[in-house]
Length: 456
Image (cartoon, rainbow, N blue to C red; front, side, top):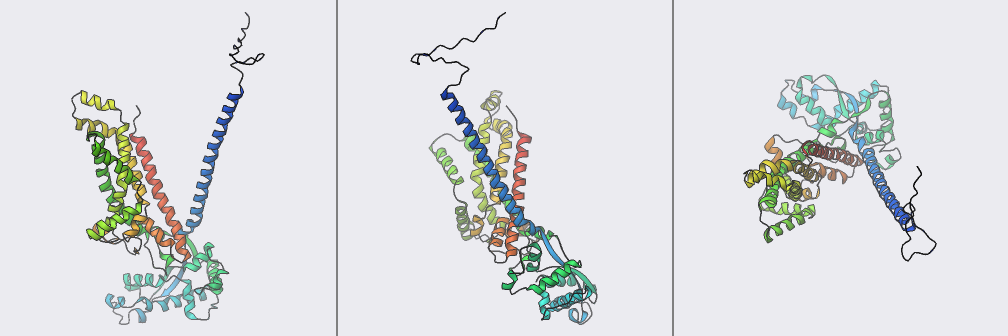
């Protein structure tokens, strides 16, 4: 048996004499085409790599700038609750105790800090007695007063309080404040930092996880170390409830009618074009619409999550309608034909067969629309939610919808424009929490799609 040789290809007409071609030999045109394909592949890999590098840099910047917001510096101070100042009558009458304002507690804080320094063998080099109080947050007197009102039986005793350090002291231990920068600062000087270093060395001052940042409320400009995003999270939660309760049924019902029941004429074409155009309208336009319709015309309460939810519903509806219609179109026509062929009505075929099969895409589009609404700031600017300091959580469900409140993106915007660097740090920390919420919603959308998806 002999090996069969591969016959050489015939020379095409017009080819130069003396040249032969083979199917196994790459000519110049094929080599150039393969080289172009390799270059295009490398361009794609390079683009993906550049995108990943920028994403990594962004995440590193967010974590580096926002991570310190989740920790806070505390000072443990023994405070003597002097009966002569807090309950002059001595009968523990709560109404009399409440008459003592926070100004009456400030000397107690100063005395407690002096005792703390003496107990730890630290010399107080500050010239003025009241200067030592600059180590403590301005919220400390309110914290002590609330404790006394809640526990009047402790008046006359010495109680240890874990108080927030001032924003400058906290920034010093986080690297945000340096000794050189304090030369231009009237609130603190190097002597305060020496005392803070000594307290840290003796264990009276420490850094710990700051749960108040996640669960607490916003604070005034003078108390950035007390500010938290918890109440704003509640405001965003109530807004999302409004968006979910309105956008999902309205959007799905509109999509089902346009896709399954509406006749194809100029009116439905006009509606479809307008829905597509509304999806591209800037979000601030919806804010102007909400200001004119819901606040000025309907006279709904300003800065309320109800109004914010209505505005975000208008903005989210086009996204839900478009994604729902795409999910309905993805259901094979044979499903509809089979249902109609066995005697089902048009409505039965849609609600019993088409809609359950399209549900993964509908839920995914709804969650993505809610995630988009959760991160919107511009519409909230125009209805006043950015200018309201959410200092207390709502009292109940009705107040959660109707009382003025803020939202996470609006709170982040408000913190970012304040002068104190501690608020800038908290703005980055709020971004981390907002990204975690958005990531969770997208993960839920992926899981729902995989849970209900059917392959044809």
